[in-house]
Length: 380
Image 1 (cartoon, rainbow, N blue to C red):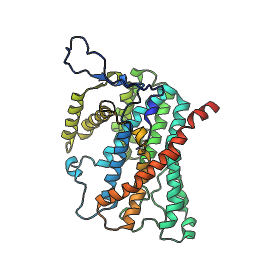
Image 2: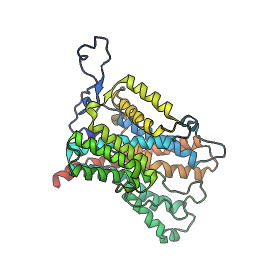
Image 3: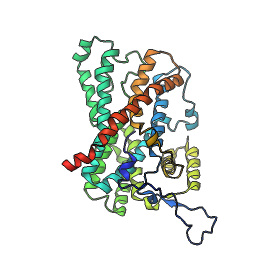
Image 4: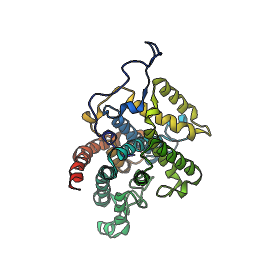
C-alpha cells in the first residue's frame, strides 16, 4: 500500500552498505555465521525495499483479477495454500503497512514533524489526486452509461473527487461507470490509503507527545496500544472506524515497533528460514494472526537487507505506488472490454498497461514532487 520511500528512513545515507561485521564475535570460531542487528543498516541505501514494494503492488493486482474477472469455478490456486486464513492481496497490503510503519517512524524520529508531514504529503497526494481526477474527469465520461451532461450533473461524480484527500469516507462508484462489471467500484484499492494516512496522523500525534524519543517509552506505548486494540480497536481514534482496518493498522504498528527495537532485531538466514516455516505452518490454524504477522514481517526485512542488492531504483524507479493505485481501474476497463476473460488474462493484459503508467507516474510526477521537499522546507 504506500508509500514511504527508503530514503525517508536514511536521510544521510552513504554508498557503502553495511552487510555484516568484519570479524565474528569473540568465541564463535572462524566458521561461525555472523548475525547482524537491523540497526547496522542505518544509513545504507543499499536495500531491496523498492523491489519488495513493486512485488507487493503487483501481487494486489494479481489477487484482484480473481474478483474483477470472476468466472464460475475459477479461483486463485494460492487460496488452497492459505487455507482460508488470508488471500494474496491482504498479505501484500499488510506487507506495505509493515514497511511503511518502519520507514515513517524513522522519518519522524530523524527529521522531525515538519519534514515528516511534508514528506508524507508529497508522497501520497500528488499521484493520488491525479489518479482520482483522471478516473473522474477522463475515464468516467468515456465509459459511463449516462450522457456526459447527466454524468457531470450527478452529485456522485463530484463526491468521488474527495477520494483524493485519502482521509474521509470512501466513495466507491461513479455514476453509470462499470455498471455491468462483476464489481462496480471504480477503484477498490484506495480504501487502504485512508487507513495509511490516518496511521501517519496517529503516529505524528504519538511523536509530538514525545513517546518516540526513548526506545523504552516508545516500545511500552506501542505494546499498550496493541493490547488495547486487541479488545477495543473501534475505540482507537482515527483508525478504529472499520474492523477491516485492524489488520493493516496492526502491521503498521509492528513496523514502528521494529524500528524502535532495530538494535535488538537480528537478521540471520537461519531465523529467516524458521520464519518461512512458521508462515507456512500458520495457514489454516486458529493462531494464524499471532504467528504469521511477526514471521512474515521478519521475512520482509530479511529480504530487504539480507539478500543481494537489486538496485531497482536506478534501473526502473519506485513504480510500486503507481502500480497500486492504477491497477484496479485498468483491470475494470480490461474486463469491460473483454467480458468473460480468465483472471490470468486480466492479470497479464492489465499489467501491460499498468506498469508503463506507473513508470510515467514515478518519473514525471512522483519523483519531481518529492524533489520539491528541500525547497519547500527552506522557504518554510
